[in-house]
Length: 386
Image 1 (cartoon, one colour):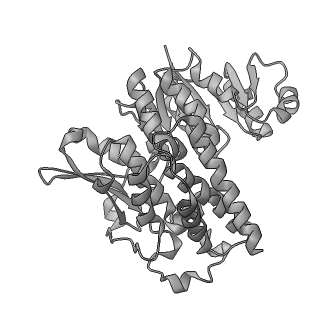
Image 2 (tube, rainbow, N blue to C red):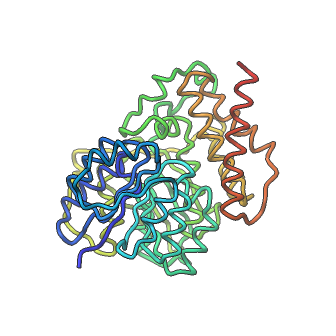
Image 3 (cartoon, rainbow, N blue to C red):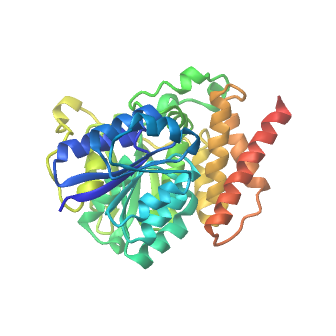
């Protein structure tokens, strides 16, 4: 029987690449369910091609248009925010790949974990916002959490060389973004276009800005703490502009194991679906002789405030990571709309963290409440300055 796969967020870049990977893997992998928020035409095109048993459209206002586009297909259509959870809980789904942006994907990720499924995590929110809750639910229900993010996939693969208790350090690599080596003074006048000009990866605008502020690495530090069950001090960040070494693990005997590859998301997506097996796929082999040299350096924590803040947030726990993530999302949205300057992104994040009364071990409702609170704080603060 083929492995039944649900792709939550199938119209985004990760979702589209996941479908390419499944095409290459062949009949042992079946697309059982797809979901999108409101990208009706692309979701309809995917539905016509893959004929999934279920499709979920989170934005119910688009349902009529979508139904008209797929009229005649034998596919069950679910609508509304709860539809993602229904897909995640389906008995016909064995693996849930979640690539839903924002806190909207949290309930379905938890539902997949409660159902004991393999949860392939492509977006940061499940582990950043609800890492403690999600990992506990996964343990209690025999769910396997497999990272899709290239850095965490690299750590996950490298950790196959030893036991968790033998790990002394996790080294997350990052390209450094478009402002590697810049001073805070040089960042004062950064434009939207400059921040969106990533030197290595082609990504959506939000994650590209996160790369420019190094918030992407900050969030990955918090993710790694929960995903690999290590103290946050064990996790370090290295700037690696070539983006060939995707991350490294140092073991207690001094061995350092790394995963290398071309900067291509298809490989970590494929490994999340085929783990623990490795099979031929879309990714081309790495030719080190063509790369020539690899460089590594420490990030400038005094310039990129997101990194030191991440360690504080991870140690605080509770609702602090939810506020950290949501405040950043809201601030980045304002920067992309050119309402604030580049350095104000982190200023707004720090403002929210300073004002927030942290709750300890939090329920999903409390985490979502903290998320909404942070977004309101950013909005109010921006309005006051306009």
